[in-house]
Length: 401
Image (tube, rainbow, N blue to C red; front, top):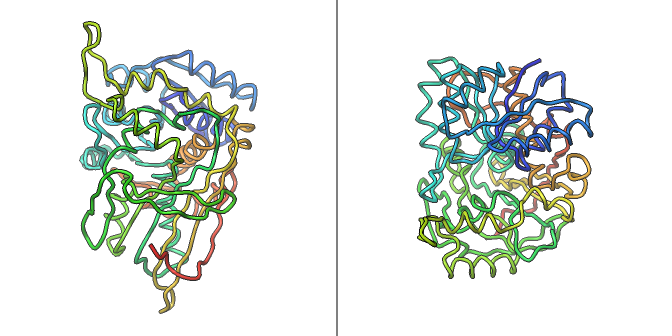
């Protein structure tokens, strides 16, 4: 029985607190906080209607360390679950250190003024958290998060060693909009337009964004074009599994999405540097975010499924073997349960599970940890029990691309 403070009331925050409320034996008291308390109140009403559980709400500016620390102390939280913007990770970590509570997030830090995300900024907190006797659990979403746990599970149970690892993220859902993003538009577009990057033979290989396309047949979704991208779990997996010779991340995009994105880039709407407009500075990408559909609003119309998993080739009992560990999630089923589409669901459920790992002591330690550093089994068990069942397939041969 533990008190938890969740910061961030978007789709992921909504799913996470719904699922926490469904597990009162672990989460005895839940407070949801955001810059706009009205969003928290709306989520709290949904949680009450769906689960009968009352959660508290609060207003907080997560960029303000003192304000966040004051709220943590008021709530008497044992754990802060950071589901706010990645820009705010370090400030929230500082607030946790100031108040002596554990920390968890789903995405690594990136500065506001540069489209660059890496774990170095958060790994630098290792000594401070270790000396304080506190845990900081990084990347407990789906990717990063579940995909890293899948890799740990593969290494523990399915392969003696891993030579290549490919993470495949397919959203086969259709929301009916001409152009919209399934999570925060600002973060989504910064991520998609960044140069591609993958790990090969001990070094990073870079290329232009979205320049490497590969068709792939996804179970229960169909054939989709997926694109080689950089994603933060590549960095931590390369660090903690140095045996892996090649690690890649792929994500699917439809032609209409890419065409809209190309036009927006060409006219400067994806810029993150300030421009003058009628006597004041604006960030074009932030303005674009304001006029695009709110991702949390897409659940009502989204149909279809997501299919996300790891394909690994390595050795088992002296023979080469290729395995595929994956989850398929239905948008409409996710919405029926929590009022959110599957992209939020597949991140919010692992956020709840990661929090449960910390609060129950299933995972413990002092310092800054990535999710793949722990025993995958209790996490994998909770995935099966709480809406994200996984399956294992053995493929006939390694990927031929």
